[in-house]
Image (cartoon, rainbow, N blue to C red; front, side, top):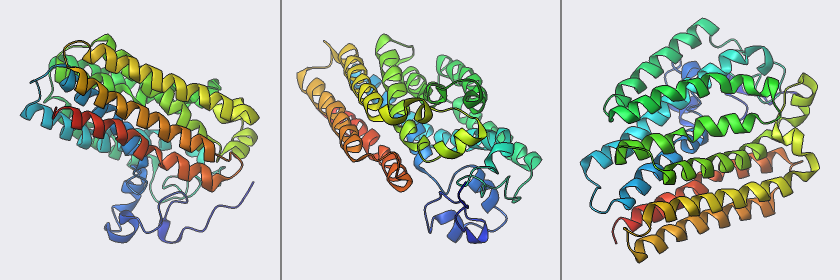
Length: 321
């Protein structure tokens, strides 16, 4: 097992060097912000982007429905993603505290490194969750119910790698729930278009988190926890190609179900262009993937922020036509 990278002043090994938490945050707050992954914002983006897909596609599906509430849903999802990603990561670190100290990449996290106790982490998790709940209460009742229902998925995910080779599915179920919630907050109820969008996000999550999991596959195998990286092994690229295609096809289906026939041809074409640009970005990642190079895996994993933003940009543009 390789030695952990040197991380002076409590920095976490896989955090972006020179991040704002390590440079600017008050020393007393740094362990808690590290628990929330504020020094590693990619996870917040990956939780947020399906929310933005949902609210924007719902607005595009109902011409003239975009209003100030739409802007609040958009902004509220952003704040909520920061808080709930923080709460979820804190919960993950509490449940994994006896595993993280055995993995080179994770033993510098706040709990195994002794920066914060499990009890302190639990209190921080509750604070973040309560603030997020106050934001959720500004949405309609159906969206509030969906938000509460998501807690079960968040609670289960950290244990998935102990009992299934497919923990990435559980991550996808939790991380893309915002597509259903934000669609419902905007449209007032669920639809098949939202379900297709949700499934597209799950396929995308399996794609990017399998890339991420290849960083830890040796440690995971020694410890005895499971992942799709270990399951797919040398066939990873073939599997990921399948999830790439599934994600693009399901997102295309979501757009067609949402926008045909009410939204108009130009809005449909512009939105589909965003979907295909998303697919092209995933294909670009796959062409450059080297599962034996941890630095490449981390770089490509982080590139999924840009991939997920492409549908957002095209959807936002479609609202102008």
